[in-house]
Length: 188
Image 1 (tube, rainbow, N blue to C red):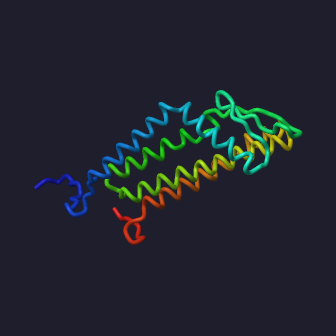
Image 2: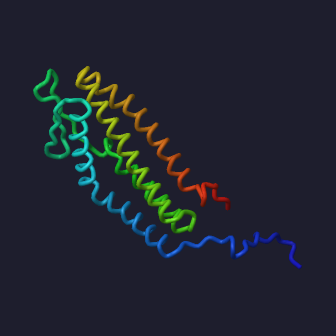
Image 3: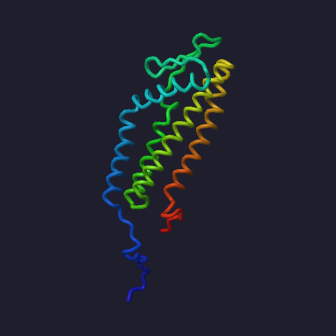
């Protein structure tokens, strides 16, 4: 008989193994994360295109997308300015960890395919909505107060908006992922 402690034995019925659909979706999500990094410039351009439509819809100010994701805002009004949508203005790199976390949960058999798809979709849409609100607020403050408004909008107000949205999105995605069948939490 050995005096060393042994690892707890997990009965076969309690072990989690990922199914083929879970592994396939995990691979697709990991591939999407890599694609976002590889196609970063195109993803930022797409997001800038969204901002160019959101600003007129929400502020009534003109917004034209130019080369290199540059938005020219306020033509025909009292304030005209341009801002370049760069990596720091985008949520592209924030999506990568969400995709990788969902892939890890899937490959460990901890989340179902429908639940993972729902969590990733809701998370991506919420992050993009929050970031669009942030950019619209920055544009509104810049239109109202010029460079000073841009400074406040970009550094303080915009940061609070995106950090709050990121926190809520993370909690929401983890809540969705942690829910078991019939709304009960999954226990290990």
